[in-house]
Image (tube, rainbow, N blue to C red; front, top):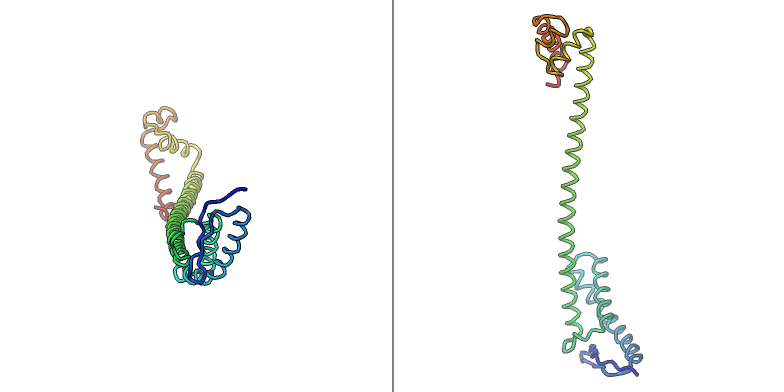
Length: 199
């Protein structure tokens, strides 16, 4: 038969009772009975204590269950020499502090995410607005150019968008420098008039 050499201490009528070196099956049954007694006796105290710290009944209940689950899983031998109530109160304080730290980290992370999303939205809408304006400007430029003859459009496009010199255009289109300047001036004047709301 397997013997267990752990010590289990439980508060019974404010007196410590020790179990040790007993058969495993018998120990498990005794531990379950003792654990149930500890749970029933101290649950309300721990819940109230944790509620005062975390101010949320659901969280307080979860933390109480976590404390008892840890106690049950570990068959806690580290409480030797302590009153069970003091041990549970210390465990409750530590678990509450851990919870509040975790909550503060999560809130900071959420604030950071919210700021990033807000910044992305502002950038997106700013880009969207700029794209819409750019689209309107391009559409207006296209409409203005359509008002002129094909030859004038060709000269203007070559001069402005293809960066051709007066000399190159004069040779290609067989027109004077003066005529090129006049076409540029005429189209730019019309564009300024149409695009005054965007400038």
